[in-house]
Each structure stands twice: as structure tokens, then as C-alpha cells.
Length: 241
Length: 241
DNA sequence: TCGCATTTGTGCGTATGTATT
DNA sequence: AAATACATACGCACAAATGCG
Image (tube, rainbow over all chains, first blue to last red; front, side, top):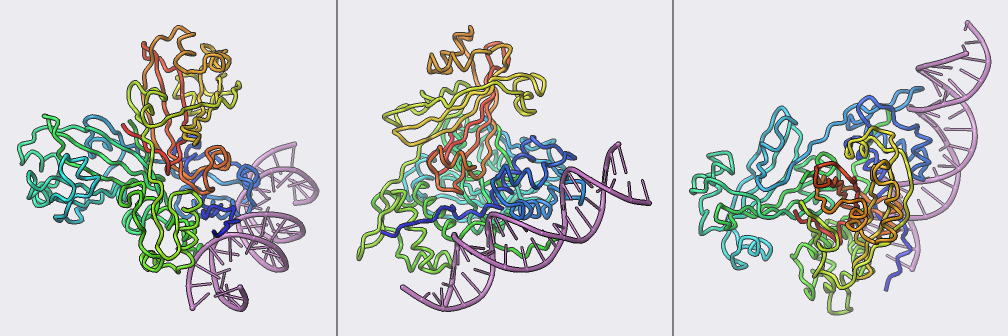
């Protein structure tokens, strides 16, 4: 067996520092206009060299999150983060109202496929049964906020993809099938590094973290109608229960 | 201003491969006993050299997630992940019942400190006010599952640390202050890389991802009683709403 | 205006990690 | 297994801008 002497975890220190500082900022510990601790102090805090801290700050400056001023310090420039509420009656658009000006969802297409074990279990059908798969990408004020994939039982929602493209809204598409109301049955939240496709579509740097929500919606009678897998950039969103 | 030509995201390729394969396993695409694609195929899939893939597999083997057998292939050994329920009446122990045999929490001590802006806001007190800070580490079947820090208003819960050490349970400690019932007011979920302390205590590889839950509990009258920050290893846990 | 401490900006040398061939 | 190229991280030194007395 290969012995791994490796003590670094394959994630560069500067990136961990980027994540830590950004979390302090978007999490509210540091407000817009606040001065960050000096590079020397940050280096001490993260047990890193000042160069390494400077690299992290350079990344954040590139993003517009902080700005350095020679002789004065480094300051927080932009501190906003979106909160996405999760609950019984979660609706994407309503949830983010008031937080953003503009809001848009791009439909990335739909197709028929055979249900995975996870999708089948969630929808209460047998694995391998035909399901409609719908892909979408949602942006707020031009910044990608969510990459989602939704599966629906083909027997009940054969033309869901077309309905959705026409009606532009899940709520309305469900209405066209006689579902006046629906609610969230369960949401499972996990987290991982973004894959290549997500990195590109969500405009992330490789190695960024995504929050993954696995949601099952049910109609008024409690029957599962959709199984959705949404990926949120952890650096831009937090989920609120 | 320093120009960042860097296009890599500070995450080593072998680690991205580790994460991707582990995701297939804990996500259900690969079940226990399944044979992984050959190293050559994986190398092709990730656009990496076979050396790099072998390194990733070595890490997963070290974790016990996969095992390589010469001449036969590499197989999935262990595929389980725990689910932690979040809701109005979340209690840690009850939530994980049935999923684990043994369950233990180590109290890592407590102390007095001045409330951070976040803690103060959550507890409805002024920033800088005295708060009790309690540290804990919870393990299931000997595997660390959660590292948590809880803050409480000193004026109401001066001896909470001592009570907790004696009574061994938050619920009972709250009872000793006359709080027969409490419930979850809000939970915010975010995600980031584990810091050094978390890496050590949760027995993670450096660079691993933690799910961070910021929870506020309130008494029957709706008054905030505690503000807790829990960190879960994303590779071992998921949160269920 | 000057001096001084603080803080960011820059250069260079070295060691180790990463990834490929 | 070895050789190569590049990224990461550190240590030290010094320059440049700022703010204060």
C-alpha cells in the first residue's frame, strides 16, 4: 500500500484563507467599510506567511469583496450575501424577493430518462421508470445563484418540459396539471466541491464549494410530484430554515 | 496591482478526483461492493494522468471508502452517510437514533466572554455583553460527527457550563433554569473548508468541507436562549429539514 | 516640515507539493 | 523510477504611502 506522507490536504492554504475571510464578510462579522486586521495579524491567525495572506487578499480584491490601500489597510468593499429560505411552502422567487433587483432563470433544456435509484425513491416509483428531467440555471442581478435539476414522473407529467418553457414557472406548470397547491415534503442538505459543469455555469473558480439541496415536493394529497437537486455557490448563498 | 494569472483554483487535482468519486459513492451512484471504473478510464474521465488518479484512490483507500485488489479492480467498501434532522423541535440525540449504535458528546470546556456582533444579535443582547461559551464534540460510533460552540446570555445562564457538565444534556441543563420546553427559532446553513482545529478534532483530511449550522433556540415565550454554531463533516453527514 | 510607527507593496532565495511525461 | 515544469509557502529585507505628534 502506498504510504501518503502528505500532510497538506490538496487545498491550497491561500484558498482556505480566501474562504475564511469571505465567510467572515458575508456572514456579517465584518461589515462594508470595516478595516480588516493587518496582513501580519491575519498571517498570525492563519499560521501562514504574509505572502500567502496577501495572495488570498488579492483574490478577494479581484472579486471586489475587499480593497487594499497602501499605508492605511485593507477594507471591506462589498458584503452582501443572499439568504435562501427553506420551508413548507418554499418558492424560489418569493424567497429572494427584497434581496435582489433582477431575477432570471434560464431553462437549460429537458429530456426523458430512466429514474436513478435516488429519484425513484423520492418520487415513489420504481427505479428505471421513465422520468422527465428538467435543467435550469437561476441568476440574481446577473450573478448565477443556483443550478438545478428536477425530475418528475413521466406518467403524470409527460409534457412538463414544454409546459415549463411556455409558462416560465414551476407553480404555473403544476397548475396546468391541476395542481393548485403543493408543498415541500423534505429537504436534504449536503455540501461538496463544485464539479466542472457547475464551476462553469455558476462562474466559480475550480475548487469552490456548493451547497446541495435535495428537495421533494408533494401535492395537496401528499403524493410526490417532483424531486429537485439544486446546487448553490456556498460563497454567495446561505440556506435559512 | 498583482495580476493573478492563476487559473487553478488552489485545489489539487487529486483532491478534486477524491471528492468526485466520494460523491458518486455517498450519493448512491456507486453502491457498496461495486467495482469502480479502471484507473485508465478514470484518468480519461478526469483528464488527468493515471498517477494522479492512483493518488486519489490511495486517499480513498486510506479512508476505507474503497479498496484496490491487484488484478481485479478497485471496489467500494463503505458507503454510509448519516442524516441529521433539523426542525422546530430538533434534539441532537433523538435525531440520530436508529442510525447509530453508540453516541457520545465530549464537553471541551466553557468560559465567559464578550458577545460578538453575531451572537449578540441572535441572543437579542448588546454586542460585547457577557456571554457563556460552551464547546463540545459529538461522536457517533466513535466517529466525530459534530463540533459545536454555543453561546448563552450570562445574566440568565451564569452557571450553564457547570450545569451542563453535571447534567450531561442541554435539555436537562435548560430544565434546571426552569425552561421546560424550547424550540428552534431559526437555522442558517452555510459551508466552507474546515479550519485547523476542526480538521484535528473531527479527524478530517486538511481541506475537507464542513457544513455550518447557525441555530437560535427560544424558550416557550419566544425569548432567545442559545445561539449555537455547529460544524458537521460534509463527507459524513447531511442535514434533513 | 520632520521624524516615526504602522501598514501595504515588492524582490529574491529556498524548500516542498503537484502533475505530467 | 526519474526527470521536468510549475505552483505553493516560507523567510528576510526593503520600498512606498499614510497618519500622527
